[in-house]
Image (cartoon, rainbow, N blue to C red; front, side, top):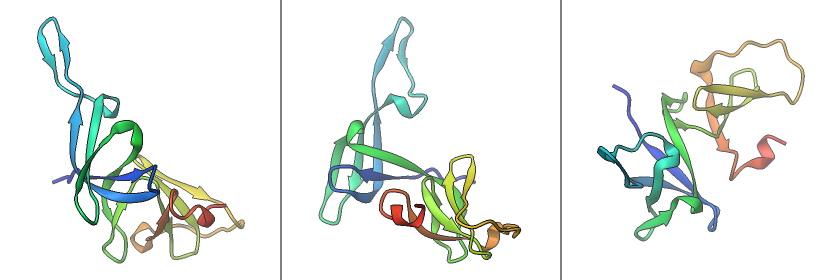
Length: 129
């Protein structure tokens, strides 16, 4: 069964926090209330900080979804994670796949069971530049 969970990059503090709740906008239509459909319908996000639970406006965070995979160290893989494979190639994980960051030309093929999360694009920009 797929697990749905998110983490949030809190722009102001430049930190990543686990998301505990997502609150959607209530949009009323002729037929009643429309259920939330996509990330644009998110109004507020509740995150766990080291001290407390805080509710933040959607504009204050960037959400990253868990992609239902773990790396070779059993660490959850989220969107925007930076991965390294067994050949040393570096990738940025997207929701629908990974994009290779070419630092040096290589003919190596990637075996995803050997990938490892080495950071994310917000806290570790140095890994992709």
